[in-house]
Length: 371
Image (cartoon, rainbow, N blue to C red):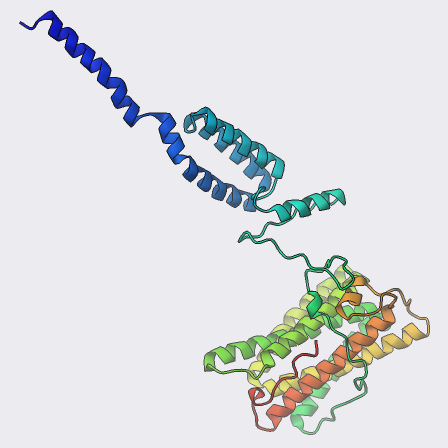
């Protein structure tokens, strides 16, 4: 029969071991402290993803998550203090990485001072976008192009040059353009601004289609393009900037937008097929289209000179894009746009001549660097 002393001794020994075992296996304080860096990293990633989807919902979700973590996992007072501080920073910042992306917060604060409702967009890879300024030190406000992409148009170019149709292909291209010009002229008549906007929505298509197809050809054949991909894409971008300039002056009506939607869809597919079948024919058609564009802008200038159309101040985007004087007018803008169209005319006729002579475009260097 065991003695009373041995029973008491065994019970005391068990009571001493239980706290020691519990302390090493299930201590919430040590577990929270060891996991806290990992939790912070994962929480930051989680909050960034949520903010990219929906900032307001992300703030609520992050607050609920932090509350649960603070009660169940981060049991020490120090960890709870950090959770409370993170929650306060999240509510105060309202942006992804309120502490990391200081430039985004500064931009957001500046926009709030201006009364704007838009919010700054934080960079995906954590690098703030550079602050760009003009030569006079003022802020650069255009995202569609940069100061080094601006240029001075060559207004001395011959705007009356015409490529005479010499063969069946040239005549087909010429009369195709003349036929398309008739309904357009009847619809717009002397409404130059609307005519110009429709013209630019079509004129920006060939360069993009041609550049895209040459790009794919270069990839298939493992060869260079002679710079023609870049030249054609520059043409497409320049035509688009013409349209963006006109959008600063006037906005098309709903039926004009419907016409643009229809015409662009038809023209894109038709020109795509034409370029696949015969690139030299496609470039010749564009050359004649650009000739008509030069003529239409010449008529625009005539109406500006005789007072039929108001010669208003030039838009700010045009002054920065073409490096025009600050006191430039709409007439100055039309002059440089006409010079651009004349350059596109010569480029496409030149591209067609190269192929008509039995050569490929890559054999002749493309005229890069005008824009």
